[in-house]
Amino acid sequence: MRIDRLLVRLRFVRTRSLAQRLIGSGHLRCNGTRVVRPSHSVAPGDVVTLPLGGAVKLVEVVTLPARRGPAAEAQACYRMLDGHGQSAIAAGEDSATKGNSPP
Image 1 (cartoon, rainbow, N blue to C red):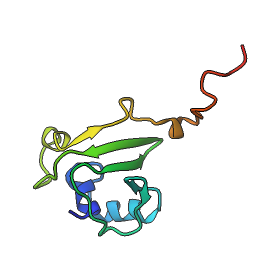
Image 2: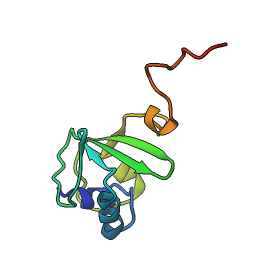
Image 3: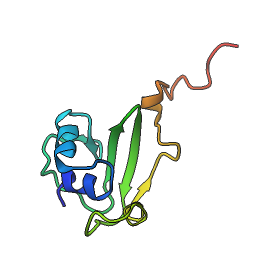
């Protein structure tokens, strides 16, 4: 499935044009690789990194949705890998220095 359609069907963006704009910004990644085209193929098991708002969301695609349905149906198709919805990158933390701050 195309990544722009996936973003719409999983309800991360409202329209395909907004999904294409997000992809065009150059910050979207799939399995650690920058996505540069809306036609990038996504399969179950892929990990998508989404910069949405002030947070970075890590999402594992569990199944491909057949349609843009209700939110509960869309949420059943993916699993959040970062429980708080904000990775260390978005928070400005460095994992190497985390916990090593002076008293």
